[in-house]
Length: 198
Image (cartoon, rainbow, N blue to C red; front, side, top):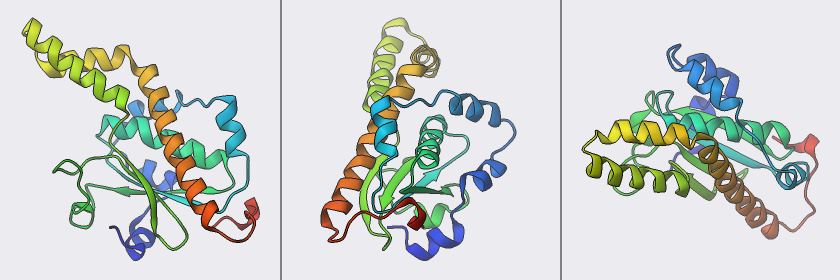
């Protein structure tokens, strides 16, 4: 687990993180930010008051999945009174975050939803199920056509980019709601207001 001191000392807010993104990747990040959309039901949920949830994201500027995921989480935090977000650059802190693995390897983005005590409530890793399905289908298509898998994936991901964004939004939202309900169900007092968010 990433410890609280490390998060406080090395984590960045969105503005700080975007200042570190290499210029060659910025247009791709900006295009994804413009695609973030929430349903009316999701917007209504974000306007409610709950005990604070802290989102910690391990990201990398070169990572396409990060370019999809991080802008969604940033917008969620901007629209809510109970969410904030800290971003940790994976490549700058490999030794500190490499112990967090999934399926035998380190995956980015890694999204942790934690409470004020830096205890993990839930997590989300790498990409939406819909995106994995496209990846698998691309592998099958590449073998059938003899094309390079990377080229087939690039084409299919581009073709389905808006659906990937929506699927990712919905999965992240579900994980956030799970964290909110887990935390608030265990608290004895009433949910706090926006002014008390850390």
